[in-house]
Length: 605
Ligand SMILES: [Zn+2]
Image (tube, rainbow, N blue to C red):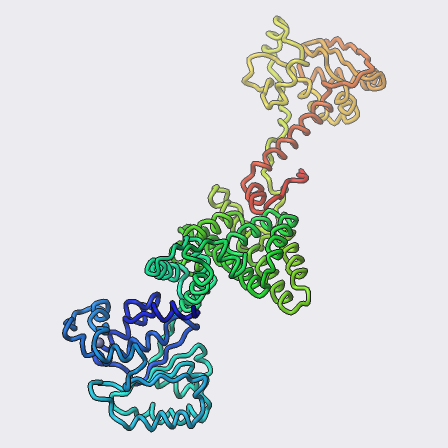
């Protein structure tokens, strides 16, 4: 069985049958229908995508004599134009051209007939008229870029003044090698690589016609391996069929064309994304054990990372614009089956385009090194290991734009700066300010009639910010903390300093019991301190007759103003720390920098 059996057997005989190049076949059919066929066509594109096939269909369509009997041309629209000019396949011209036996069609391989003499021979033949029964003479030159400069120059004259009813059709994979003077005299059509889905569909049709059972994974496997070339895909199918009795499964296909396929690279990228180099090595080992062809492997390897990069970038771009990804277009662009596309897309949800770019860069340099190395396997292992241990990073512009987006979404209108600082956090709650002014006499009298609870039990309320000593207060409710502030406000700095360190077990009108260290209490008992204290009590309460008791203790005085203030300050700071974690700016930064955490929060004031 020859490799080209299927390609020949299933070569398209009509415009409609040429898969994946509708933009060209419609234009060509339209030109034929309107009798505006240019004298020279230049068909460019990769190998095996239908260029010479299209050239032959054009030749048949131009010279077909059976068509008018079947169809009535003239309907509007390209689609119907194509239907109208399709060669009938039955007339003598159609049959002769299909069999490469027509006198009206010259088909020349530019690679083997590239001399000026070859071209002169061709030009000589231009003088003759088309053979009887044929309207046109058609010259198809394949691989036209292989012609020598002299040959091109000889050809140029004929292109400038083409004989009537002569059509040149040049096909090439490398149009850049053709002189501009030639290109400018041709109507150019660029053939595309075929989407894998188009190839897979065609292979399925062929398999059905050949009564061969092909699993869908096999079709996808071949379609992608062919990299957009229908002829390559058909050659591979030929080869597969020559190995099997009728049923072809993926395992056989992998044995023949290499074990690695899309699922292998999905698994490998899983291991890379989860930073699991050991699993990478295991997967690579499995692949290399099957005496892998390094060239095939690196080509598939870099192709996979290109797919990941393109898709990841598209996902991120769509997310930025707040639109959906154009899955149909992307799937065609990446030449993936629907299932493969969905698989790949789901894996990229958590990977940034920036990281994919970095992974691609490593993959690319790995591939380059592997191709020139004596030890390509080691190079690939080292490269994959590098990819699997790459710390995740974000590029600064995307970080800033993300943060600013999240901030605007949360309504937190703070300009974004490069640094994230807790110093910008709003101050949560300030200490209650000391109350000014003195209570009125009648309130104090009431207080005398019904003494209030001791100051110690009232103090926690004060730290909560409640005011127990405002002018609107109905009762005299002395606050030890207020009193200490009062002392300080009278410039009794030393006295205030000692009072801050002791606690008031009892603080009601006329009665003060202080508890504290022996040293502090002794200092307060000193005559100057004590008289100052009495003065302050009088000015604070308006009441002059105070009984002051001192209760020394060895223990730490928890209720002292100093202790309470330290406690309150601790609470304030821990609230700032807690609030800062809930802060939109900090949250945005945490989400943006994957794996980041708050190490410390410095409260600057
Ligand atoms: Zn015909």
